[in-house]
Image 1 (tube, rainbow, N blue to C red):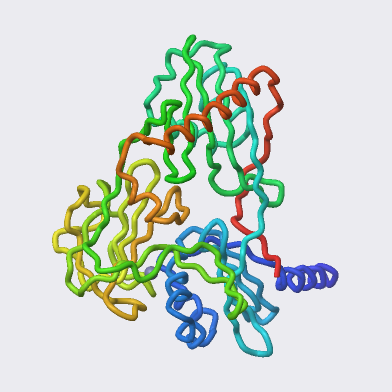
Image 2 (image 1 turned 180 degrees about the vertical axis):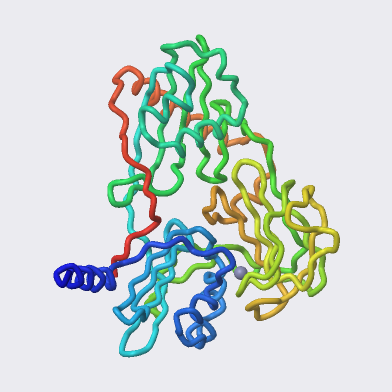
Amino acid sequence: MKFLSFLLLFISSVYAVEVEKLPWPKGESFLTFLEANKIPQKLYYDLDKEAKELCSEIRAGIQYQQLKNENGELLQVLIPISEEMQLHVYQEENSYKFDLKPIIFEEIIDTIAIPIKYSPYQDILAHTGNAKLANEFLRAYSKSVNFRGMQPGNYVALKYKQRIRMGQYYGTPQIISAMVQVHKRKFFVFKNEKDGRFYNEKAKSLTSYFFKTPVRYSRISSKFTYKRWHPVLKRYRAHLGVDYAAPRGRHIYAAADGKIVFRGRKGGYGKVIEIQHKHGYKTLYAHQSRFRGGLRRGSKVRKGQHIGYVGSTGVSSGPHLHLGLYKNGRAINPLKIIRVTKTKLKGTAKKKFIEYTKVLSKELLDTIKSNPKPLKLEPIDAKTILEA
Ligand SMILES: [Zn+2]
């Protein structure tokens, strides 16, 4: 008995300094988290506007990691806000500090060819163990090709980028090019890096899905930046959206058809509406003075529908609309997507793109002949590992 109690004490003292991985609770904000851990709120209020906005990027359910001492005092916490960056709060000389820390991963490019036995989804999954890749493949074709005509022995081939962390798949893979054989025909898709859209070998866009600028603005007061190292401040900075300066009260419109998935306050972003769209896109409209009446969570909205009014709620130096755009939960530059309004490339852009697709098509077809073994890893469950 004496031995057992000694053992329990030993285990608990070991566990007390172990890193805990926890899902971020629903309804928890950065401020309530500080409060719960008896960390002075001054830490948050002293942050600049950009960093305060990033604190509002924390999503419920995300895996965060913390380290506490035996008295339950928080020593360190890492909270991912994107696939690439995490908020870091840590104790140093009896006070708490804040910084933004990059998440470390490697990125590989793989080209694979898979003979079909059941369906593209099942066979990609069986060969790679990568469900997100199988999903992205279907999304790339977004029902433009009917896979039912496929016969056993037909091939799918694809080239993609995948992030890997601790020997596991990390984040959403990015398809660069793909081919699917249906009976005797071959259907290709190619990602255009300039606008993030898929095109065919004739440089014709495969989705006629466009976003509208959601406000009549006077100027863009802040652009999108992802993980920028500031040489003077010697720290990372980021702005996960675009700021449109516009007078208070000006109408805000839905950038595309979709469904409202959030309507309420969100820390530094103030009054926020989030709309889920097709193809894995989501938009976020921050700092609103008020919402348009009659809309709630779950409401369907049309592109161009009035949803709210420009304001400066949350942290904001003047009335503006902060627009965030996410693809599969990953922040992307809204301007890259919104400025695209054509379904066809023209002139030299078209010529260059067609040349590019020829190289990629050949590569896919060669891969079918050489038939290399696809990479197969486990998907990562925790988003990050503590490494400070
Ligand atoms: Zn902003």
